[in-house]
Image (cartoon, rainbow, N blue to C red):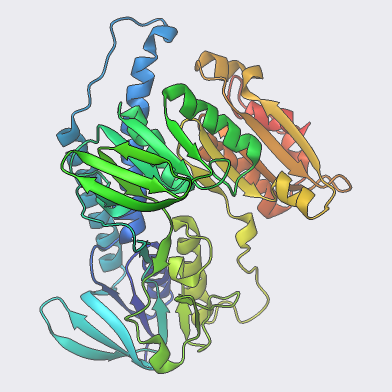
Length: 453
């Protein structure tokens, strides 16, 4: 009998687990209640990046005069943007569904919950309820926006991120609550569209978990665009009127706008999975997993946001693949476990921000000796050609061995360029390996080799 491999959740983690298990000979079932592809790809990540790409195009056209062009302008067609996002989502959903079908994966539209260690109850959209047996269960139900009690979410003026890809109407003045990754991307996006934006920052810098030098570049850009920053303020209430909103902060300040958007974290979708009934251990709603993504019950795994690890689609996908390989015996012997500290991440603002591995601030906080080298893009011929010399490349290495430990990039195409440093960190390469690489000239990547010298 084929190994019965059941996945609850059809996002990046679930899809990767399913297709990998199918290729390894398992009998695979995927249960998805909403859209195949998952919230990250089809409601959050992809729509947001599509909107950002439109905003970036508008910004480039506004700056066309600096490139020797005249009489170039752009006006946002919000309906056309909405149609473009829908088309991208539809194409991706079709692609993912087609891939699952080509691998022989059974897709069930509905919800799933554990009713026994090896039994999954499925409630399909038409109300049909059935129980399917499972040798392996993968829980990959993702997360949803966190909504505090003081926020009267209505989907019209008071929004979560799920309401804003795109929002019902283009805001005249958007108040963004939360200055983490998602918050700053929305600030960039809507200010590029020409909206007034106020950002409520609970700490003394945006992106409080990032390198202060990185945050400073982004703050300067925001201030240059006219973004209002409420630093050191925590939102504690929202008043809604017919013509706008007022966000009350704990220091007495009030941020007024036409709309408010909450970007203050997420919570796991775990409460309906029957975890307590079968003895799966959790922590704050997240499934506790080991280095193989196994839960407290050996044949039940968790991946993606539900695992409580890095909430990145890239991490979820590789977790899904590793789970399938482990469950079907490929990892019976020694193998490389996932090292979340070596995962590259990016923030799609303008300029882009990306980092990987050990951060300079963390190294110093730990008392660890590191070598830090930094090269500004203002010294790059390609950056000058692009009329965008903002930002820098920073590489963190071990002074004794020369091994690359981490790095950060601020500037155009940072999300692409960080891949080189990520490869170096994962493979244990030395700075000399980067410095002696012969790259294209002129190219932004030359700053990587210069920082490694």
